[in-house]
Image (cartoon, rainbow, N blue to C red; front, side):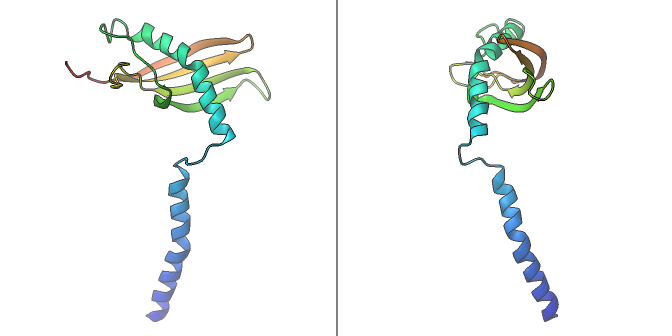
Length: 137
């Protein structure tokens, strides 16, 4: 019985550090070159995203305001390029636009952009995932 208990405690001691490492690795606590590049990409594409969302939301979803995009509400989902070191790239985001004043989310969208030399930025896919109910004033 003591041997089984010792094996069980040893097993838990070996497993616990791996579990805590896995959980904490999902939370980014330090800046990195990759994170900086992602944030720069989001900042540079925000005007295009906001323009395309305004065209989609107004006036069908919202007549009172144009959706506003904040960089921290843009999640980079995927990046692809046409071939190794190719300069035609596709970038997919999930975005939660807000009302711009109170920063209340008004919806959720998945958008894919194609970026190529020139530079050219073109929306190639937009999927409206959800419309949130906007609270009355």
